[in-house]
Image 1: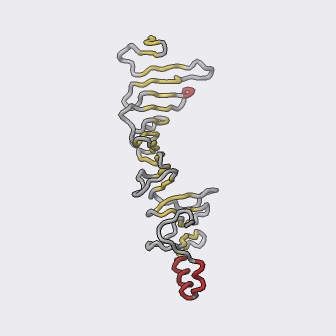
Image 2 (image 1 turned 180 degrees about the horizontal axis):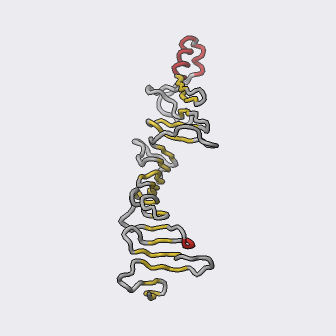
Image 3 (image 1 turned 180 degrees about the vertical axis):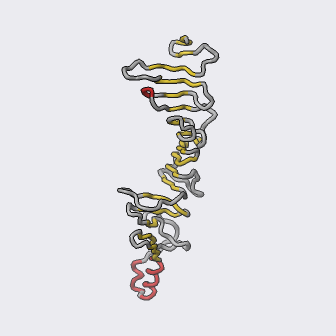
Length: 213
């Protein structure tokens, strides 16, 4: 080992597969930094001689082989999924992506129209079942958003029927019963029977996000 430049160490033995920088702090038994010559690792940081953070070669950068991994788990970690997009993978599958548009969970697609910014998108996955102690979950199934509370009750958060009308939909875990109420159709039937109720219904052409026209 020799000093190649004032701030760089260089190994001179061809057979050397790694270079260790040892910490002399009290209680430290292992290397603080290990520069690897292995296929899957270029740099390994080992804090206090336990655990490890690996920086993988530049040919990596996929969900199956992320750029930065922890504990030697080579198919789980951080990677650049595309320009300005930071992906997180576990088990070789992308689980989340951070980009200028926002956060995507369980997928990477953008909206067909405007991607927007500051958006949180959740893609279809396996729906949770049963109680969750002191917690609640948000998930997507068949393109619809749901919440499930600590008791296992499920409520649809994107409440529209296939024809676009407003509905209420929930699963009652105590009664083991699912109920769908066609609220908009019910309301319009009441208006048909009593036209004076029409003052409670306002229709506008086009899309309005903030409730104002």
